[in-house]
Length: 343
Ligand SMILES: [Zn+2]
Image 1: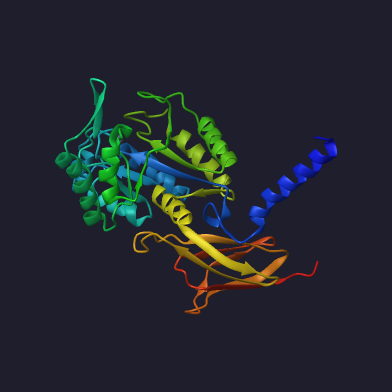
Image 2: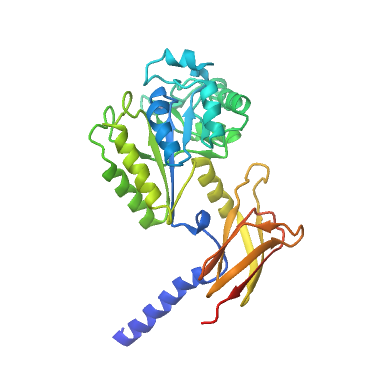
């Protein structure tokens, strides 16, 4: 290929790639951010409540707590009798408070026994009735006690099989299967640093994917790291990257992703007006995350978005080069209008 041809070819490819962002589309992540991160904390440890929860709340970060209902005490007094790193060290009273602060309380089975194991080279699942009880009973307890059906499930020790997946999916839309360990390989993460965690976030920003952290103890217990400062320095880093990083619970991020993949956007954009509908094939009583629709524009100022049927105003953000509209995928016609500065 002659060099002039190569230049023409590369120009065409570049244009084609640019075109994807030049048209009306659904943002990969909320607010058209580049990547997402969810912090998940396993086993309901009191050590998390003492050291991680205050930091999460201080930095305004909502996390996911994988709890074990069969080991969860009723009251804080009972919980205080457990060791900091014991399973089920947060009471129902406490978990309810965390939920009201916006954290996700999610299912980590009734008693944290392995749901599947390898024996003599063969994978064996727990017998069906026990498997159903470990997952279903825990689901029902969280739904009843917290008042919100758990959206996600994590299996003890990450032991998974098709049989476990099938039962978990009867109750939960999402199973946590791909996550990164916040720490080193157990039993200790004493050498784990915030710089290592931050570098992982950078990798996910580069890939444009959703990072799910799995964390256990903070200062004392399984896989504890050297000090709460490791977590605090990482939370600071996440906040500093907020323009390009969506930080939210695993339920919210995975719900958005599933909805986005099951939604169809149709519409058109003209100089100062766009019209579109966004429809989703999933159950709207379960999938309730608004999606971000991106309208590419030039020199936009002061615009607004409306549901054309109800007249209801929708949240929208006007930026010079794009307008971001938050829409539930209800298939209703949406109209967006704006003005342009003369340039
Ligand atoms: Zn666990």
